Length: 283
Image 1 (cartoon, one colour):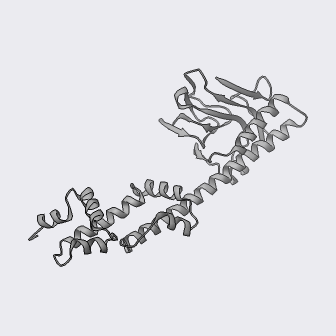
Image 2 (cartoon, rainbow, N blue to C red):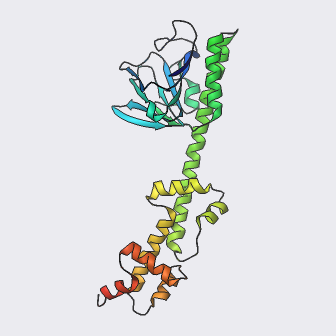
Image 3 (cartoon, rainbow, N blue to C red):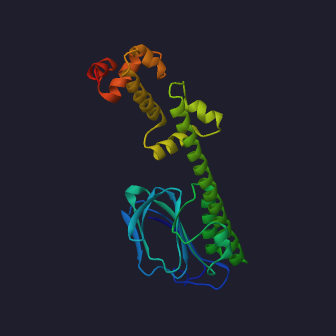
């Protein structure tokens, strides 16, 4: 296991406390290379705060009695006294940074930067976090003049960057949710129109892949499949009207090629448009 650690002094650990506004006790990095697993279990928690950041791979945490599998870009903030149970497994390729620090209860800086009572935060994957963690570890190892103040500033910068990126991620998430709602409205109002996701995302300044991922998670199916489902439902209704030819139904639902339309219809409903019409005669 790759282990890089720095301690303020030889007594610094999870039991250390300080009455200063911000004080960094120890910090490190763990990356499993040969060791199959690494685990920490502290039922009574630590006397100080511990921030754990997943730089790569996955890590498992027991929060409120439930195992949570967290991936790259997530972090966990344990408050003083919070039970600490976490597990790293070689097969999940974890690369973990951590730091123990003290600050006063109801610290204004923590509150202003978005760190509440919850434990799990998604802050994204940013190289600036790693540079700050590496800098904190090195500062603890070298103990240069005014290292306490330097550590305080670096720790606050780390929490500030993570807090700001978390707020940004939440705003982006909310924005994409609104765009998904707009896409759904367009799909239902004009299912026959030639609609491409790429044109939609480009016209609204969205990331194509992120939009598809958000849509799929929120709706349960991809945008393309959702459009097909709407069109095929509309087609089924139109086919119950004998005045429409199959080719006309195809065109009304956005398909210029009746053969392609028939293949899609059969794939969705299990029968061809002609067979569907025969089965529903007299209904």
